[in-house]
Length: 416
Image 1 (spheres, one colour):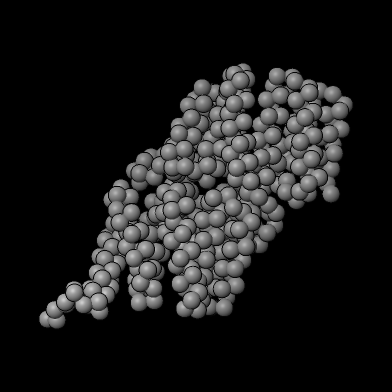
Image 2 (cartoon, helix red, strand yellow; image 1 turned 60 degrees about the vertical axis):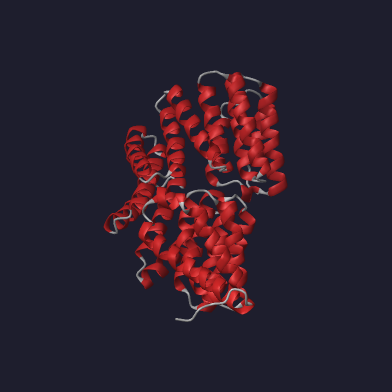
């Protein structure tokens, strides 16, 4: 057995390189054995990231092992909300893949980076990165990551519009995933289509795609997927105005999230349960769940979630005629969206202020809200108003108290 003399520079280099290899191999084996044990994975997360950084420092020599560990840990980092900590790792890995002209690994890491931009509400960067991923994947002949970029970009367009882009991208992704026999990709894309048709109020198609996703996840014994299916079926029944059915699915999802120690998904479930209880005419319960969601999102520094929870908390206060509390929560939500430079969500906050002004009968504030929405449309164009937002505005138009507000609403709702 060869011995090393650590007083010699070459032997020290060999020793430290071998230590890095040993560390990477250890954490790869460990992660494979514990991927479904979130508490243990969370406990060792920083040690695994440290091993990855050492591997990246070693460059090409350790790249195959480093890349495996990055892609193995990435889903966990995304679910736990550790996006700002994880993004530099992905960017360093992507730079290393580019140096080696490794298009396949570039495509995979580019897709992860796009997802991180999306999760942090950097939508323009996310769109550009998804498109770059598609180009890289096509050059590399990587059907999986091409389809993954398509379905994820479609998911982005579900919330922000235009919906026809979401539909085209998701159906293309579904076709590609089917070609390569990826049940994982098919399930996620069926789920995205179910969410899209929920937004479009096409209930039958929404339920069809969501049930297809659930069936795939059931067959593959995927607990996280089943939890997502219950969350989105709950959302479907919320939008259909069936709170009891929604609550049934969200209660199941809550149990699944608790079993998996997934506090971020639990926050999303609490957020939606608050909406259910508002529909059921129970604002105190709506307030309680919105507050729980907000606390969890804030614990993990998830600003978009905290803003949505603050908005829902405002609506619960509004239902209880607690106008000052509703005002404070809406201001909090708007400040977060301004910080994130998310124009669409800022407009949703304005609609919240419009609801508050209508509830109090404050005509000056009502007109100010409509004018702010009108200015937004003039600056950014009607393409930034998804159809469901138009429908919401049309609903409130019928509650306007004077001719000035009616004219402001008509200006906004006219198409361009």
